[in-house]
Length: 365
Image (cartoon, rainbow, N blue to C red; front, side, top):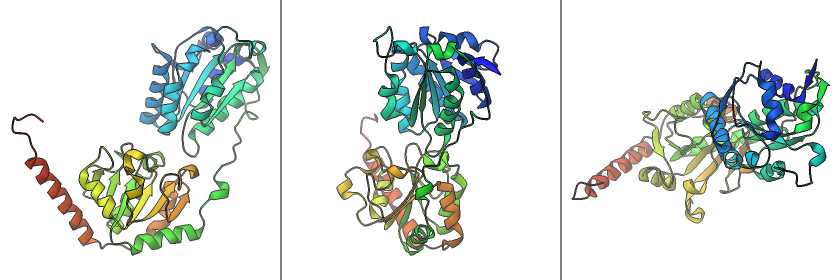
């Protein structure tokens, strides 16, 4: 099948199941826009390229699918930077496709030429500069695989204008991505799981810290099953809200700077913190020198770089969160910890009384 590079973009998106893209046209991406006609993909025209990346990010969070944003070179691409950085920090899978000046013009300071791959290198999982029509399909398809895999995040594909205009035969089987899983050399051994289970069973005042990774791994039921089986209360991060039903009696609420006071007190007085898919952000920990000094710590995260980064832990496991909890559940001792749960209930009550006592006299909050 012979297609132009521009047609290959849309054909690749179709093969990835894309139905919607967010974008704003411009000179270097016009060949792709011209080729879009005839493909059953809805294009949502934005007013600014930053909006395209934020909309793709929101789409990914709401749907669980990879969001796609499209922009031209130069200012179109640089306008995407804030949205890309947001997606990177919040582990949101998006693919940004940008036009670039012709390959022979790269490095000549041509009109609206910007090194967008260099600019976005620190805020993407990976990025590509595509200068040949033959490289469009493998680059786009690999970008989707990377955006979805492990800890999700943004990938940028920068495609020169001549790569969009050029033609080639496409072997779609050869264009299939072949990724090596980065965690293969860091998969947890049985000893890591045994150590975690031993700490959980031996703790009198344990607390689960549930982050965004709970939802990204689809581990909502497993986290709740662990909490209910071992009677362990749960504190959630801002992005972890929704991972555990707010009405569940073991859900204490949000931790950290903008969280509930009793939740932070419980963290400080716990003897074990089980951190699941969260990264010990400064808004969560406050002063690291005084953070939960009396607690042993277990940290499970798909991203090995997050382990022992901000807080040193006793057991660090780089793996899929759901897989780890499924491994633990049959070995976790059920029940107990009534005194700990009663104490936390008293913290809630004391906080509520203080809130009422501190109401202003003039009726304004």
